Image (cartoon, rainbow, N blue to C red; front, side, top):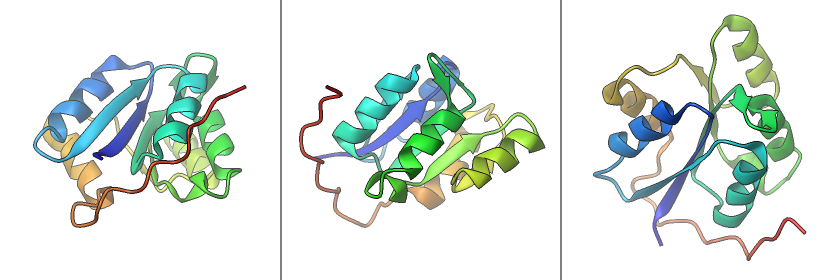
Length: 134
């Protein structure tokens, strides 16, 4: 089983950059532009890392942080928050983000932010039991 990174953002560029940044590693990058899909994919795949920003369809990255931090099993997943200003960043940290980063402009910038949070020397985590939002 491969490892997973979830990109939760309406900004398609972030997902494309993430896929390019980790293409040589054993990571599957999934992209969710809306809150409900991000929650579903998190429950289904237990990603190793989540990258989000404020803008999601049907909610926000702040809502995602709140939801994930309220689940004991999911609360251990590191979340990088792409903040547009200091106020957003502080709110994300208060809600449990591991780190706040600036909007990455290049693959290299995003790669440098992702690398400290990727588990390259460990076996892929066990998949969470099948999940259905019903």
